Image 1 (cartoon, rainbow, N blue to C red):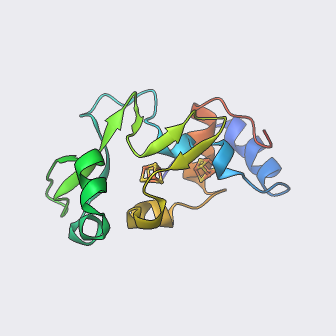
Image 2 (cartoon, protein in one colour):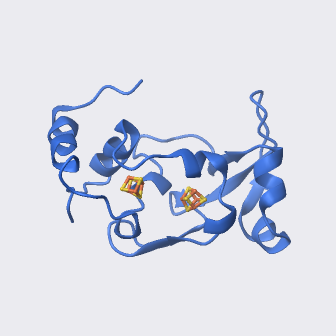
Length: 127
Ligand code: SF4
Ligand code: SF4
């Protein structure tokens, strides 16, 4: 569970009054500044991997396995998911949006994780 910083709490109050525009954000598709792990972004299970087209796999999937069922991962480029197009905080899109992994579909705008990602990216809500 994330511990909210004071700025997150303030942002949370603003979020209650405004709808996030994910196409002008993309903060959750970017590694946190503190990330020092491997150059992978989203871990993929068999179901996630099977949804991707051959071209999407060739372009974005990298070898990865873990003990929690991941059999591959989406790669990371310039410290963001390789499927993210555009510039975080400006105009962004997901190149595999129709076939994106379940964890991306489950990520909720206005959640604690959303607030943290935006805060870490230096984005003021409502921009
Ligand atoms: S961090 Fe929140 S507002 Fe930004 S793209 Fe992700 S879900 Fe949308
Ligand atoms: S697959 Fe799409 S939604 Fe998921 S992290 Fe990558 S760019 Fe973001």
